[in-house]
Image (cartoon, rainbow, N blue to C red; front, side, top):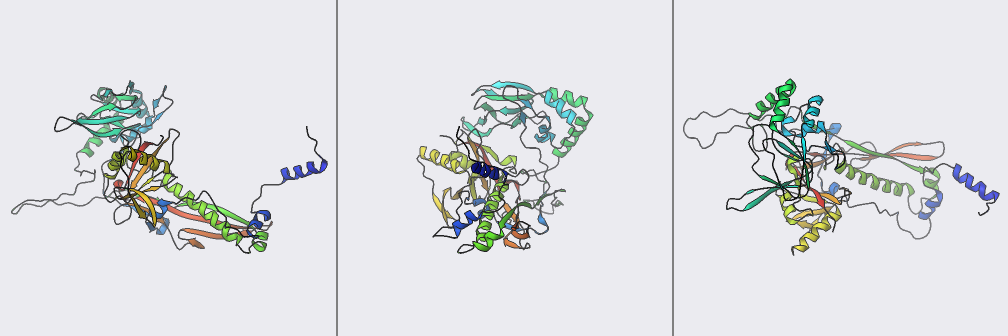
Length: 465
């Protein structure tokens, strides 16, 4: 073992005893004060296409209320499961994501209902029937098809983990045939079993009476309260009286905040500001990191994140796994005036490979002064904030933007005290007893989806080769 001198031991002890640095050291500061040099560079900065393409709306009062017409639809989400594939179990509270159970809050009844589901396994290519009951997909992918007008079989969509089909209410049989595209685990509930539980639970029976009363109310194709209009009549026909009803509890989006404290030693700010301003460059790099986090939150935040706020009617599954032109067309067809697609760079590369297989060559166009890929005249923009799962899958977002088009908007408030950029302030805090100058850097933001079809997503996109 190598010997250590007393001086070396003292130096090591001093290094271990010294606290972590709280500001830029003079040694690092000298890198900007001598020789011909570049400004400090950073690898983590991305194009931040989402923040560049969103129209930003001034949000006074730090909240934005989205008023919509009254809708009778609800509970069209995904049922959740827990455990491994061998011992997977249904999570009872998530049953309220099923349409006819939306708003039912009796935990004991939901637990009893979950216990009545039976599990079955289906191999790829096997037809899955819900019978007179409800079938929930715990794991796997299911394709929907029906007989076409001219005797052929037409595909009508894909279902995946957490989706369901059929009903335990007397609403008729599904108008499609469900076929397992992969090995599937299905949890089924028969109508008889459900009715037995309803007979034993007054709370569930009373709730079903209210559900059926809601179903009898007139509504349009989007589930909104109908506005009665007479057309094509002649003579002195009585005209219907009507009004546009609104949601009684509209959603409000409050501004979120991303903050950090920038610390610069006064000695660095005083002595090493020539030819580059140390505080200016420290602030620039800090703001870059803050803006990157802001875009990440706009996509992934549990409350306002766009990936979490896509309506279930706008969630699509890929037909075969990778993102094909057919999948992109299906996503594009779900809304009018799609402004842009947003996808991880690896997803865009996977889409390019699928186009190459079909000898298709996606066009390019100019967006915000940059040349980008496009599909059907809609920009396909890269964003590394969209997650890639451990299973090598990701998502593609498609959105319409702007208040005038009832789309997706960004929210911020300008005119802040010590505002440095729109919606971002840099406020001097203090100089402490160690001579460290502190600045509070704050960014305020949010995003709102004005109507459900403004935002769509293609899920479980396989991006591996």
